[in-house]
Figure (cartoon, rainbow, N blue to C red):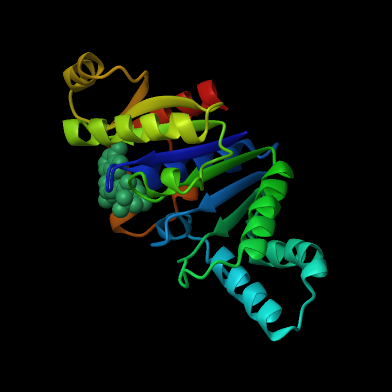
Length: 245
Ligand SMILES: Nc1ncnc2c1ncn2[C@@H]1O[C@H](COP(=O)(O)OP(=O)(O)OP(=O)(O)O)[C@@H](O)[C@H]1O
Ligand SMILES: [Mg+2]
């Protein structure tokens, strides 16, 4: 099961991904892969986990070695598993993979294709994968989210955020035809706001998360969300995840 968390900038994607990681860590019964796919890398910080090498570091290293002739293209697939494993930061049953910033635009198709397969293979070795996607539709467009099973669209109570979620869902439905989509309304201060969103969109509203001072404090004080105590926001997020995972 690969779950991607997507939506407009600043609506709470990383917060929700971090609380999802917390729930998986607390459960502890399954091995979970957490992917920080935002080049800004906020998820690792929210979890208090220091990412080592990023996926793009691995990619650059492989391209370099192929160009230098140091590595035969045929043994790329073998070494890539090893390099990917090195890029994981582990804590208990969680493993974190940071995507990093894609830099050179040159097409090293062989490397990219092998890498994509390797990530799929990596995700398959975990019971579930949670991806904190980059804001907006770029990653959906580039098929980064091509193999996801479910896209949890996050919006705050603004219509702009809801429309962005609709766009992602429309593009995503063509890129990942098998995937499910659901809208999570975040930072709700009054339940009437949820009804307004429901009335304004055809997306299925799968839950809502209240504005929560504990979440704000953890963010402001840069505390690890793995240590977040039970609070209204975590209860709401846990309930939504339980219905999806
Ligand atoms: N339910 C909530 N209650 C209170 N504050 C929240 C809640 N959800 C998110 N926030 C706050 O909103 C801000 C943005 O959240 P977050 O960084 O998770 O958004 P994002 O969608 O990942 O942003 P970006 O697009 O920049 O990656 C943060 O300061 C976070 O603490
Ligand atoms: Mg974020």
